[in-house]
Amino acid sequence: MSIDPTLWPKLHGASVHFPIALVMAAALFDGLAFFWPRPSPRKAQLHAAGYFTIILGALGTFPAVLSGLFMTKGEVLGHDTLLFHHLFVWPAFAGLVGLGVWRVLVDDRASHRSFIAYLVVLFLTAGLMAGAGYWGGELILNS
Image 1 (cartoon, rainbow, N blue to C red):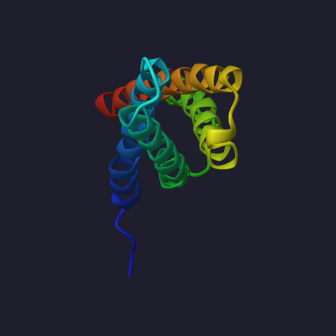
Image 2 (image 1 turned 60 degrees about the vertical axis):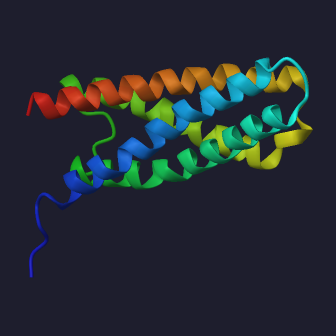
């Protein structure tokens, strides 16, 4: 019995969209919650949505990264388009996992200043995820 050679690309393609979408959603929800004018049930709901989407996004990065490593046979940088993809992937992966861990450990106990720092890193990570997605698309189009 042999393994289907398209298995890892299929798994990778199926798994990468969840963390990308979830980090964007977390940025939207947490950004709106931060700028909501006053404490209210809506602000709490947006904050909770940001909490769960960043944690699910962080968890979702593991299948995406593992399937990508299988596809590249463990090559963590590569060359040409793959290099550009990985230059965005690795910091985005670290940022997303770090943000998820921070939310689990700190969440409602965060000071105003630390939550601002969290938002800055969140928006930077969302940008890195978008860049990784762009270069991943270029890999597919150019193969």
